[in-house]
Length: 217
Image 1 (cartoon, helix red, strand yellow):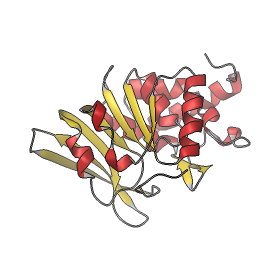
Image 2 (image 1 turned 90 degrees about the horizontal axis):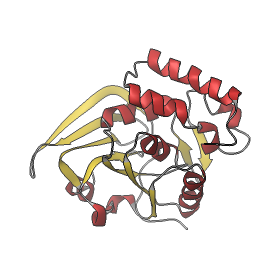
Image 3 (image 1 turned 135 degrees about the horizontal axis):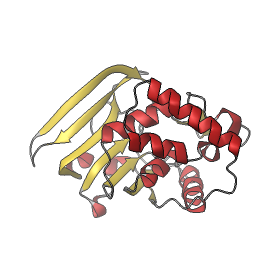
């Protein structure tokens, strides 16, 4: 599917998947998707050989592509099923959207920085991953396409944006890093009914760039 993929990169991906498995990622669909998506295409030029290291990398504009373990964990926590309608807040490089697309989810992804949005949209199309990409304020979500079965926030939030909670389907799940400052906890919100939500928080701390309002040209 990807002409720029190589045996070396595929070997590095397989090693990365084994490391993720040892670190506690157990969902076979998540691991299979990560084994297929060429992460080296989603990092800046010159950093391709670092793409399969378990660390975040800068993608410009003060943003990063999350380390593979974080991507795997958030995806696993979402409990993706085929054809789930998923809203991603923070497209970034497009790598997370590619993982979700590889898992056959119906992906809607929002990015506030126009250059990142344009680059990710083009790259996803080039790689034949299906995702509906939007340039806009992530705090607004995408009400026109709601409700979403799953919502993933890939930037740190001090509290849940109310607009996003209202766009989550009953029986749906939202996953986000929550907390002020430079440390957050990964948090799951399950919508039990129209008015009832259940929150679960993991103990392991994470560090994400903050989720900001507005758009950037």
